[in-house]
Length: 126
Image (cartoon, rainbow, N blue to C red; front, side, top):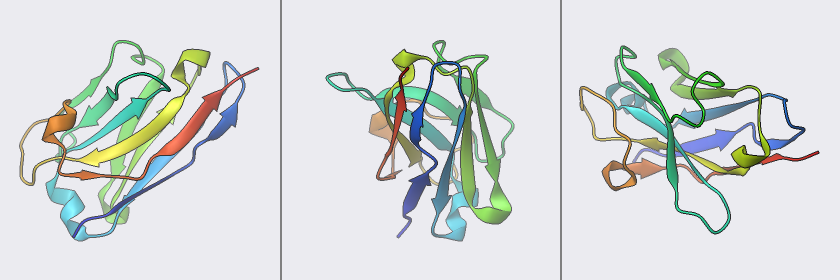
C-alpha cells in the first residue's frame, strides 16, 4: 500500500513563499506520475501542477504558472511544490496524489488518482 504524507503548509503573507513536500512510503513512487491539487473552502478540488514519472513532462495550471515549481527527488521518494509570490487566492488545502503505475505521461484529473495524501493547509493572509 502506498501512502503519501504532505508537509510544509502554513500561514504566509501575500508575496511570500512556501515549499510543500510529499513523501511516499514505498519505492513504487518512482513508477508513478505525481500531481498536486488544491481545494479552497466552498470550491471544487482543482489541478495545480503535475510531473511525469520520468520527470520529462511537467504541467502547471494557468493560475500558478511562473510562480509555482514542481520537482521530485526519487532517492527520497518525495515530490515538492515550491510556491513563490503567493496570493490570497492561493489559500487552500493542498493535496498530493499518485497516478496510475507506469503511466508514461502526466495526469490532471482527480478521477485518475490512485492514492491521495491527507492534505496540508496553506493560508495566505495579511
